[in-house]
Length: 114
Length: 110
Image 1 (cartoon, rainbow over the protein chains, first blue to last red):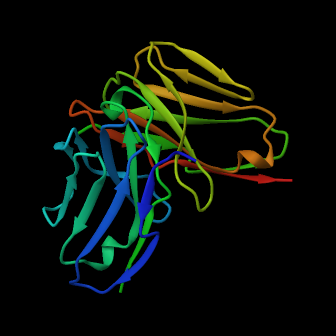
Image 2: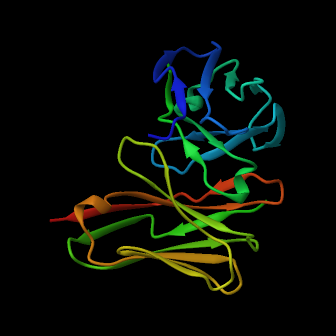
Image 3: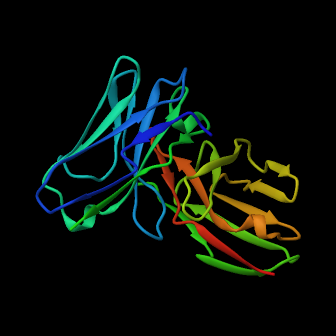
């Protein structure tokens, strides 16, 4: 049990819709990273937030956006959903920037786009 | 950009045997992290290596960081059914993001 919680755990959307995924980081952690994991692949970095500011972004289009709140919880928003967005979305929290140490992952939100 | 590659993609092991999985980076890494993801689960941190040539052991798992800090390996001895899962290595880029390899998926024959 990492203390990182994500919601919802599963959801189904149709193409063109919008989705918001939520993450509560582990107590004391000020950094949240979001990853997309397609079936059978490794986690792909979307972006990360450090003390409420985005400080790194992967190769994802602008329709992927996020927020980090003062309590360090975070949201991932995806607009204009496409079929290829179907994946497990993982949130990970860390104390400080992830490249310096351990990431604590949540159970993930499995998104299916029909 | 920085890429992390892992081989093999799949490892089918007889229970009790040893195996090694490898991780290679296109750039020099400040550190390398290893994670394990059980089927249906989420990645769980195993270890971080920082120093050139570093070797760390966790029971039957031995992790090594290459001298040039561009590659790493995970060796598991006497494989057990509890070792089933996908093992990922991850390395940081210049922009602080952690890039994961595609993983090595391990299955065990009893």
